[in-house]
Amino acid sequence: MTESTPFRSGHIAIIGRPNVGKSTLLNHLIGQKISITSRKAQTTRHRIVGIHTDARGQFIFVDTPGFQTRYKNALNRGMNRAVSGALRDVDVVMFVIEARHYDERDKQVLSLLPDDIPVVLVINKMDYFGNKREVLPFIEKLRGERDFAAIVPVSAKQNLQLDTLLEAVRPLLPEGAARYDEDDITDRSERFLAAELLREKVFRFTGEELPYSASVVVEQFKQEGNLRHIHAAILVDKDAHKAMLIGAKGAKLKEIATQARLDMEKLFDGKVFLEVFVKVKSGWADDERMLKSLGYE
Image (tube, rainbow, N blue to C red; front, side):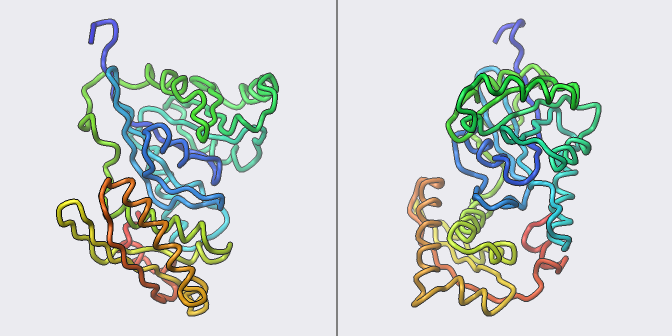
């Protein structure tokens, strides 16, 4: 490290409306899956911290829920507080939008961003443009929305332009020592990550209604050597949702549990024994005490 290349370390909030690819972007920036993804909007419910460290800096990314307008229950009020909370004490904001799409929902999120924090506009899903020259008029249209510190088109899913994005963010971070060890990728516990991976499979393998009335609690997490024993419960609002999750002869639940276990083994680099149950807890999404126990802010 020389005087001309000081080490920089800071927090970057990843902000945007639901379903623009914030969690996919975080996962690819750090090279590991720690934030769950789904084609359904509003998958992320917690603030997730992901850490990328290289020889010249440490990027501490804060993935946030998409700003919620669809539901008004206690869960979603808490998710909006998580978005607002992520904007406090960060050094940079990455404002993520979808290629070809910029509308009132994006403008609403942009209006929430503080004036005194540099904002990098990230145009995700660049593969939507068949001809890359098509992006130029789109970028010009967006320049007038705010004095962005940088505008970077990327495709998180295809790992396109992510190095360029990091280099755009780097000079905006304060000089200073790393806050985490160089091998750290998140500040979240394995217990939390296990619950999130299972919740992702609920999103992926069920219909539209169910995921928004389902959550996951890990009731037991024990590690013996390289083997993890995990007992988890999927919480739903109604008996009908329980039946939907279990499926004929338990097939749906088995599929969900199997896919979650495989992801856990990949992330934890070890064998996982996973037991999953479904429990009916009516009104959990409006129960402040229940939400607190599940780790919602």
